[in-house]
Length: 323
Image (cartoon, rainbow, N blue to C red; front, side, top):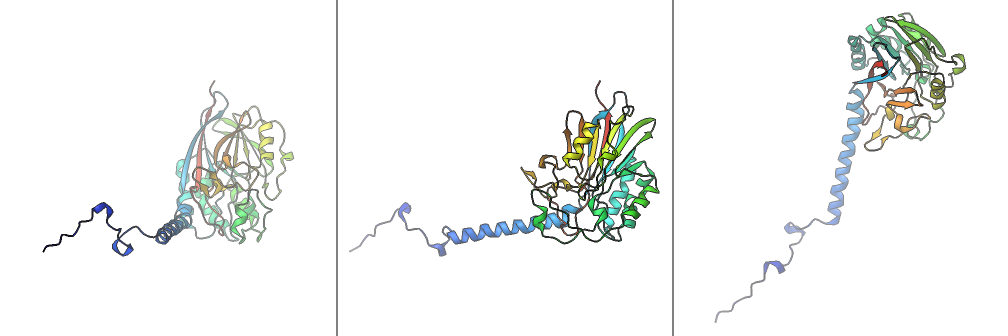
């Protein structure tokens, strides 16, 4: 007698167990997700410390800020080199900028980060020192950076500065001034640039309370085709006074562009009173004045990270305003 066994439909067959290649357990899924996040974190940390801080870039900007009828002026804006001895890649990259042959070089400070960095800085400037130039100082030209908890950097408002070893800012000043660059620390002057009159004014470092705008206050020279204000830290109280006195353009640094920028959010902090939306690049300050904040070319040796914020110099081509 033959017995026929029923055939179970495929749709009702028992699901295979984990050993048979079925759906992974919740624990395995969470472990895989955690592993992926960890790998992403390691890759991001490696990029932000080993690659991006050395990915120097030149930002080019056209700005219509000159008086009507003036011909273009090319200004190279350098800031925040934070240079230490033996940074060969940075030295070579910055010195090669002389090939651009700008009409004017402006250095907005924080050039130093080491007691023996003055010769290195002057080597980096190289042939740029043969061109017309001007400078102000930043806090790290006076004091070396010190180790500190990274959380201080990401505080919404800049905390009081921690002062390290005094740096030879006098030697840096002498090295730049002896080659013809103008010291604009709490000073103003006019220069003739290829037959055009420029009015320059600057303040010393506001982060360490060395700024004294009262020494330069008053209406900017109305006979100049460009009225240029220079500061290391773009504190609004300083920017307001430059704008009130009729300056066309203000150049600043200090923020490092935020240094760590989050896609969709931008800079996390500016380390000064400036709002995060202006942490780098060009914006308008008041009805007449333009502001350019450089993301800078370096970082503190104790916070050597950049994320979505490459180190930069800026070549500004200044043109006449439309009639």
